[in-house]
Image 1 (cartoon, helix red, strand yellow):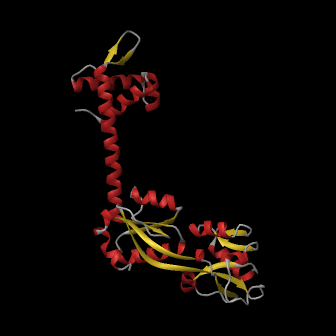
Image 2 (image 1 turned 180 degrees about the vertical axis):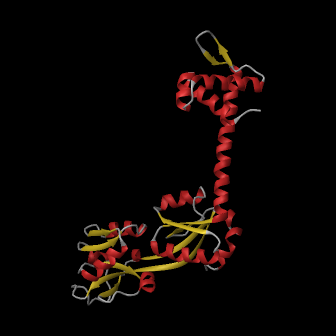
Image 3 (image 1 turned 60 degrees about the horizontal axis):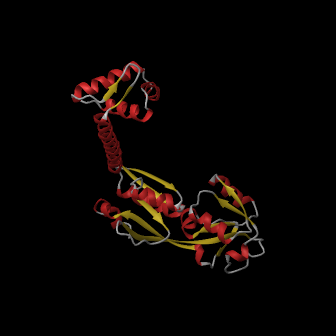
Length: 280
C-alpha cells in the first residue's frame, strides 16, 4: 500500500533534484529517503528512476508518478482544509465586521440564536472581509453597503449616526449641528480599530490631528478629564449612556451616517434561517 509520506518524499526529490538536498529539506537522512523511494517502486511494481553509479534521476514513468503524487497531495491538503472549515461551522459562528457598533449588535444576536456555538468576531478592512466570506473564514460579514452578486446575499439590519462630543466650553458647543469640515483642523480624541470609520475621518478631516487611543477605558477617562472633542454615535450612547460633561451635536454630512448590511453566502442561507429571522 502506498504511504502518503512516500508521495511527499517523491515530490521533494523532484523539486530539489538531488537526494541529499531533498533529505535536507525533509529533515531526514539520505539513506531513509533512498529506502522510501525503493519501497515506493516495490509497491507500485514499476521502476521510477534511472540509476548510474553516482546518480539517480527520474525516468518517464517517474515523471508521471510525480504528477499523480502532486495531485494526491493537493487533494488531500484541500480535503483537510475543507473538513476543518466544515467542522468549524458546526461549532463556531464567525463574524467579520467593518465597524464596532454593528459587530457588537450582531455578536449579541448570534449568541442568543446559537447558545451552543462559540461566537468569534473581529474588525478588518473591507477587502479582507469579502475575501474571508468567500473562503468561508467568516460565517457572515458586516458591510456599509449593499451588494448584487450571484453568490452573496445581503440584508440591511441597522443604521448608525455619528455625533461630535464636545466639552461645554468648546466654541461650537452652542451649535445645533456641525459639519465635518467645520471641525477639521482641530485636535480630537479617536479610538483605534473602528474599521471603515477611521478611513472616513482621515478622508473628510485631513487637517485634524487625531490622538488615537488603543485602550477604551483610557479613552473614556480622557473624555471625562480633557477638553478635546471626540466622536460618539446613537448606538454607543444607547449602549453606554450619554457622557455627562459633554454636549452632543449631530453631524450633518452623509458620510457620518451608515446603513449596515449582513452579507452571507447564498449556499448557507438554510443554515442561517434562524439567525436571519431574528435579524430583520
